[in-house]
Amino acid sequence: MPKFRKKPVVIEAEQFTQEQVEAYMFDKVPLPRGVNFGSAHTHPPTRRIYSTHFTVMTIHGERATIVPGDWIMPEPDGVHFYPCKPDIFAATYEPATPPTPGKE
Image 1 (spheres, rainbow, N blue to C red):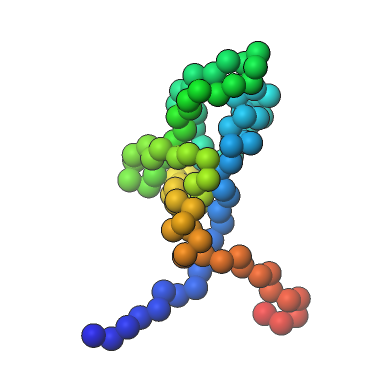
Image 2: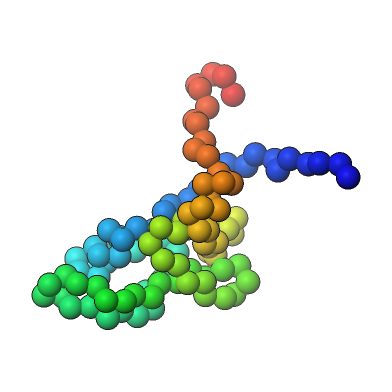
């Protein structure tokens, strides 16, 4: 059977981090674009987080759960998002180097 290589495509992505969770929960810092807060069990005086639940809305109209470490990628429509586990992201994507001016 013939083999095919996936065409290289530059994507936009942001990794969801524990620091972002803590900043949102205790310092009211906005969540990354596309991330929705679901629920949490915390103790604000000690800045302790016992459990949290965050989601992104997918192009299929479903809410996908995300956890710190997951990557968040916007769909082409800019409204929906695709979550990706860190090991899959690392195996599939690499940093895109910006084009050198005048050599595009």
